[in-house]
Length: 346
Ligand code: Q9C
Ligand code: ZN
Image 1: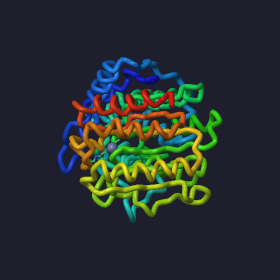
Image 2 (image 1 turned 90 degrees about the vertical axis):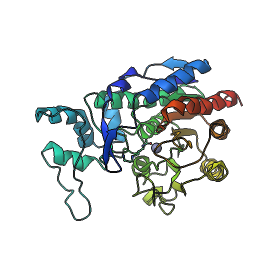
Image 3 (image 1 turned 90 degrees about the horizontal axis):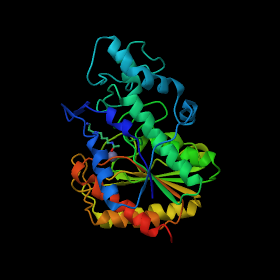
Image 4 (image 1 turned 60 degrees about the vertical axis):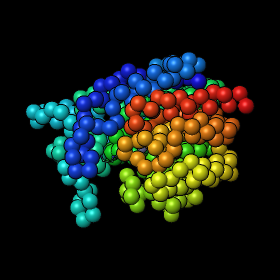
């Protein structure tokens, strides 16, 4: 399978996050990519490609222009105040506060565009996020040019990033950009299946009112799990998009039996939709060893997950999202991709 990868991810490093009341090194770290790369190179049947370049305007199909401008200039603005280290916000426009104007100061602006204090911006963040988005867009281009499947080794991840907000370690919505790329190249109906442990709130928001992209997410219930404020089963889309969002929230402790039942429901919905292509937001933080998640999938289940996805028989763009059990992330990603490779000819 084609693997699209950029070394620029490594510049997004050294950040701290507010985690359960403490500042800790960000769980979303460069070593994640090193372990994935190692495992995929050991598998030996992948073609490694750099991302292509795309005009900045392509981001504006998915994100607001002021948000892109904020991300691009955020760290220099922080530096201009004489600060270094991680940029983190300390206040948000919650209920009762104004969100009709963006404060001119960097601290207020950060709170306006962020929705958590767990997503540090550091000097290399913008370049890394842009390269990550380009990896996903390149993978989509490869599929529109005839590849049966392509994998974007995206870091930072993307599915929490919405039209004009960032959080959950995500800045640009890589999977949404890939789906848009498929649409622009003539795939009429695109299914986007999010199997990351956390609800893909950003992707859901972006496609909420669209009927050309079906969004399905299987995730830990927001009643107890991040991002807490989106991802319930009664969220089904609006306007033309009504019925084109499907949330399958599951309890903490969910095992493969329950997980695979939700996966079967997702597969049926993708088939009923009549998708021409599939984007997978591939988080492997459903793994039992994940330090910030609570599902019970073990190593033997990732080839089964891959087989279920591959068996849909559609052109597929796989986009890396979460997975924080760093030592095992490579094994689990390679297990999913391995199943794709053996099923690709079917
Ligand atoms: N430090 C992805 O898997 N952290 N994002 C919650 C606050 C947010 C996960 C605790 C977890 C986001 C792409
Ligand atoms: Zn996640």
